[in-house]
Length: 567
Image (cartoon, rainbow, N blue to C red; front, side):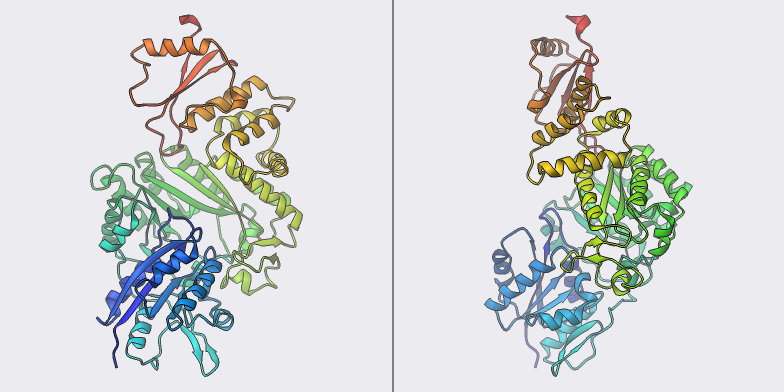
């Protein structure tokens, strides 16, 4: 007997600014494959909100079925959410899916009695078929990817990989839900690579959606009110000609069909960039695109061990070229804890990566994901890792636990000093004077900052920590360091106010302010805030008007005034 079925599809995002595409893909699957008696809605939350609030939204319509998308960042909170759901609606059916449960469905069903089903792999068709079966009270059919309990036994299916192009998730309800948050665009599934630490290679070979659909969806998202469209294709330029066509489509329509200010984020393989693609990217409007390029390591033995074939010299040259274009934010990644990567090897990889001058250099730590070869073949990839999400590496035969802890100090300093973009001039000055390699500089300061404690430190206090530490170095001119830090602070902090550590009271400040005011070319515009300071190492003033921030560097334009001759 067919029953009307109410369904809620939900997930807990890491932050409010992030949206989630997976629930909307499942909703599209329901619209395509399900009977009319089934009604569904999407409910999103975050891991930072009270779970009772998320549970209340999910249970508001008293759904019979609740599907939840699971990832390493939300699985712990999702399990707590399930407990709340079952306590308030004990007869509801809970279905889990997503990468965090696709490859450990047995243990999820064994350890979490509140979970009724797990869908392994792609979910649009399996979830819809399951809902049809529940609606018709007929669970006898064989549903691909469905894992469940039967007669006291756990039945596990192989992860489902569709051979068809999935239905589009981009409905008006989806756009209404975005509310300016980061949006996600999928134009392909699968990956041509089989990296030992990653799941993407297990999702089938790269399958590319119709390119006209990709362009249509791209325009829809660009005009949805979002500022960032992140393409989730694992290696966007795996199909070079297709990637070039989409890059050119964005460039040719930017400022017309695509509003100014929208930025498209691509994950690419840097070593397979060719001359044509680099030239196309060079012509992109400033800030229209950003590239994320996974390096992992520059150690050839490490790359071979993780099954990542890379032409290292070609990769370095390509990254240098796209960075030199200065028209897009370039993000590159290193992973600590990989096979054969010891302390010295990692330091070498770090220094090479830093020398490429990316806008962001992310130091990540290996995570042993369910389903990844590195987790499933421990004898081939020996290491100790946390048994709780995100399963981060603690120690390897090549990297001790103490060394791993020190690398976390390097990571913290790297994030705050380099990746924040707030100390660019300062770092350039220090690198030229201290005699440290980049790795040594971030290590030495990172260890000091760790002893001080940085968890809730303010920007002013952190700036003071940087100044006090480096100003004592024998090769550092204290006044010059202060001046470059002033330039950094004013150009990246729209308050226009200097932290106390950098302030110098000087009566000439008012004089300079009047000089700027009396010249129509430098007069402060109405409604525009200005920051002003005097520099003593080169005897001039600097001022910043807080408008028209550079979309690549995040900086406001810094102007200099050599005022002494005008007084």
